[in-house]
Image 1 (cartoon, rainbow, N blue to C red):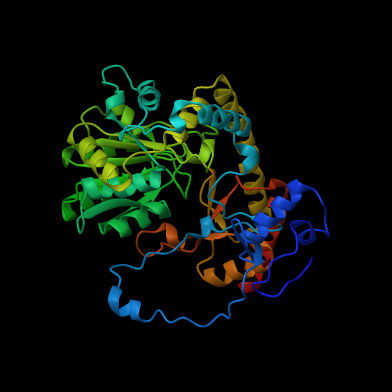
Image 2: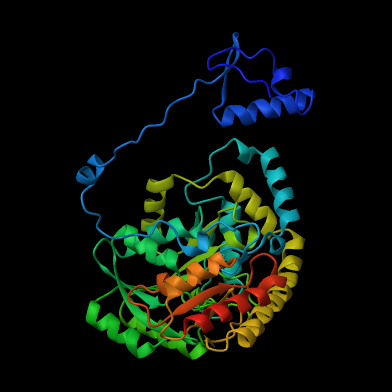
Amino acid sequence: MTRAAPGAQLPSTRALVAEYTASPVTVQRALRVLSAQGLIETRPGVGTFVRAARTPRPLDYGWQSAALGTPSSRVPLVSAAMRANANDAIALHAGYPDRELLPERLVRAALQRAARSEVALTRSASAGHPELQSWFANELGAVTPVGVTPPTASDVVVLPGSQSGLGSIFRALVGVGQPLLMESPTYWGAILAAAQVGVRVIPVPSGPDGPDPVELARAFEETGARAFYAQPNFANPTGAQWSPEITAQVLDTVRANGAFLIEDDWAHDFGIDTVPRPVAALDDAGHVVYVRSLTKSVSPSLRVAAVIARGPARDRILADRAADAMYVSGLLQAAALDVVTHPGWLSHLRGLRHRLRERRDLLATALLEHVPTAHLTSLPKGGLNLWLQLPDATDLDRLMRDSEAAGVLIAGGDEWFPAEPAGQFLRLNYSGANPAAFPEGARVLGELLDAGL
């Protein structure tokens, strides 16, 4: 490639890219790349120039420590589950399904149709697109038993992903400094949202069938809490699904304490051996605040979710969301609605169930064979994760480092506990790329554990 002194005008765009082609299309692409990298600058009416080289110098931001003061809480910047995948790594840490598990054809077509519609240039209502609100309400209403009043579209607030919704719910229903009961272990994003809002988290132990009702009642009584955050179906990270008996006892306890159950139905579309049973379908008195996300099952680029709440609770949540983000992109709402109302959506979900079962069983079998010193707490009936308990003597940080060095990415279990971890755990995701490599990943983990014991 032709080089010029800093500030010198380039002789021609063709000379700039002469080494690889004289095509005008490729020339323009090359210029865009070089401009994005800060190597050239274009001055309209003058020409294209090599950008002057700048000598880097160290910068001092120490003054900000005094200006900002001591942080109120140590909030992690990012979960291990959100780390980018290395191209050749075996990714067992992922927080999102692999691309081949997504309805790619439906998503692309939906985005194209949305881009050609009026929503591409108009603002949506703060509570969401009316047709999408109706879809969320009707989905929950379809499993609401006789005798319970189903929700309506006016009970729905569309969210730009469930993470921001959790923050709004915690602010609106709990408040800064107030106690929030939370399953332990539980979703790291909920722990993060609680820390950012400044609520006081009280862990409630939860097992394969759900939380201990006795411990939940005791926590309500001792703390005076007015909300309990939980994932009754295919919990992240454990994969647990509440039994009908636990569900009934939890709902009775919540009602007796005049409290809210914040139900996070993140894995609604990921049933394998059973179907999700939303607790919200059993309540019409406004005790259950229901969060339903489409992000993981439709596309991580379509961050669309909803909260279904009744009475003043819904109004307070909407007020917080409107103050924070005004409204959700109408383009994304239209595309999401297009996907979930397309006849191909239900066909996709049926196929997804079988593919998730194959992946789950493949990884579980590999762990039993290659990691015999660890304990698989249960074989989940849905969701995306296996919860693996390691020997107590395991150095979890070292295991994660050594595993990554060996080409296997894993997520340590510590960040899924609202308080001190109850042991040494790994959360392993079976929806990541290249499931054929799962046995090799398990073999590496087994060897590392054996070497460290």
